[in-house]
Each structure stands twice: as C-alpha cells, then as structure tokens.
Length: 235
Image (tube, rainbow, N blue to C red):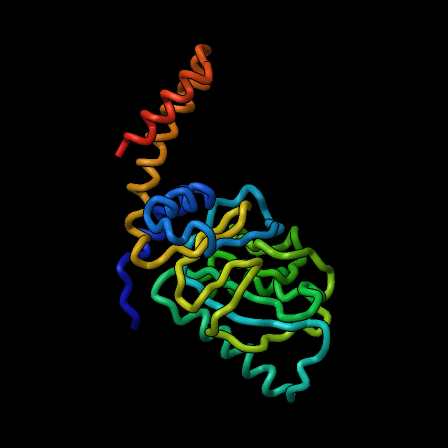
C-alpha cells in the first residue's frame, strides 16, 4: 500500500473550501504551479449545491462514438478491472476520466447506475470532458463535472485506466490529489496538502485589509494603495 504525507482527514478538511480558494493557496505554497494543474475550460456541474470533493485520482480513458472492436468478454474484463482499480484506494477517490473521441461526450458513461456504483466504490465524484445524463437520478452527494450533458450511451466503453490523462487542460496522474467544485478542478501536489490550510488563513488575512477598506465607506485610491502595501507585509 502506498504511503502518503497526509491522511484522509487532511483531504476531508480541504472540502470545507471552494476550489478557487484552494488555487489561491497553491499560489502561495507552490508558486511555480500558478499557470498549470487546473481545468481551463468550463465544466458542467451535475449539482451546483454540492460541497467540494477532494480525493485520490483514479484515472481512465473512454470512447463512445464507435464500438470498441474488442470481443464482448474483453470489454467486460476491462470494465470490471476498472471497478477493481477504483476500489483499491486507501482514501476516498475522485475519478478523472478523459474522453478520447474527436467529439467528446458523444455517449454518456455517467448516469444513474454508474454514479451509484462509483459512490459505492468509494468515489466522491468525477471530473471528465465526456458527458453525463440522468441528472435527476444521480447518486445523492455524488458530484459530476462533465463536458456536456447527453441522453445516450452510444457505444461508450473503457479504453484503459491508471495512466496519465488530461481533462480540459488539467493533466492528472494516478493517485494525484484532486480538489473540485462547480468552478472546476485542480491537482494539489502531495507535499502541499498539509500546507494549504495555513496558506488559506494567510490569504484571508491579506484580503481582509483590502475588503475592510472597500466596505468602510471611506474608500479612495490613495487609501487602496496603502491597504495593498499593508496587505503585502502580512506574513
């Protein structure tokens, strides 16, 4: 079993914060990651009211525009192998599924059944450039961030799993820590997980100086300049 420099409780604590706040913290903790490691195109959330998800990535690829061309027995073996792969995790997971079709989302992998299955396997949700359906029948508290909504399965099938994938500009490897909500998703480096909460607190103290001025009724550009200078001095 892999060892991690964090616990499931550490990941759960990060679910109290939205993904933009996590990204803000990463800018402080690992500033070299400022320009990559997150989704850069819009995703469709299945339910905007759900809390953020945070877990170990279980990565895979799918296609749906045409049949796999494999024997049915092999398709079944790949699908069940995928289930086993998702289940073999020391902590809650987030599925990161890349649709390889020229038109991603041609057929929906996610719906009532697969959301229930993956929730039972320990996943909190999924980030995919593919599609989902059955919006009113998805497993409770299972978040899906998808590229599109589509009513049909088409010929959807697993291609492979456990490899590096890319979803809407976010590169993701097996066992990466992924945080996601209705804004999108971001990969958190393992070594940064336990530095996120202190960085959030620091960022909040810096922002408070500026926000307090904006709400004071005594705002001016000169005072904003002073507030920005004071904010930078907070450590």
